[in-house]
Image (cartoon, rainbow, N blue to C red; front, side):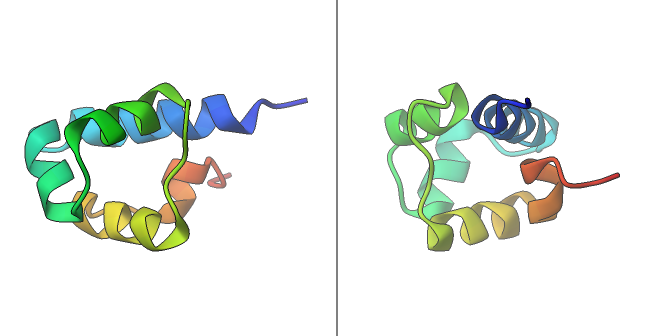
Length: 71
């Protein structure tokens, strides 16, 4: 059985690492603190759907990429 929480956190980390933006810049554009973003990346907490949508928008990626739904 897949651990979706780990997959989502890992995919989110990858998208942020591939972004030309810093973590601080991404957090500011989304309207969250950098520590909150760090918690998303570690998988300790997950964003609300609205924040998740904004993350996808700011990172210019598909939600499917972060959720690991590409086949």
